[in-house]
Image (cartoon, rainbow, N blue to C red; front, side, top):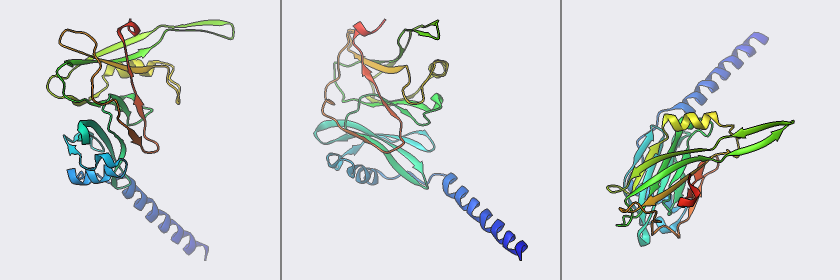
Length: 231
């Protein structure tokens, strides 16, 4: 009697395993239409109910960046992830300031910067920064000095004021080399925008935006940097 029961248990266990494997690893279906995207985003903010989708940008086959224009000329974006056999909105914002989407928070090679600014004459390009401040500490009588890091990437905004950028190998290598806490990393991301005269100018139009994110999504907000804060 024990052998038939054992065999039945093995068969049931095998079936459950393959069903779970199929459920969690199935390939993504077609991405929602613009109307479907707007309807889903409206569940987070009613102000986006009449939004115009500007683009759909696949960062990989399971993660998508969607810039849009909401009411009152508010430029924002939403982020979408394929999970559990469905496309989920994991972040939506009517403030298009640049942020870093850590698709896998433990793997910097999956980090993408995303943004959407209103078109405006006074903004010509943007600079994006990875910064780690100099540090000094004494641990068990030993002195430790950590040198500062300031990496810079220039982004042209003259054609499209929305976009995405995967972090370069240099940046991901630096992040991996830092003593990164799983909850509070020692580094941070910053940015500023420049006019055609190479003067720092803050982009107008997104000051009153709001945002919402789903649980487990790692979206890092960035800091606007004045010239005095840079080395």
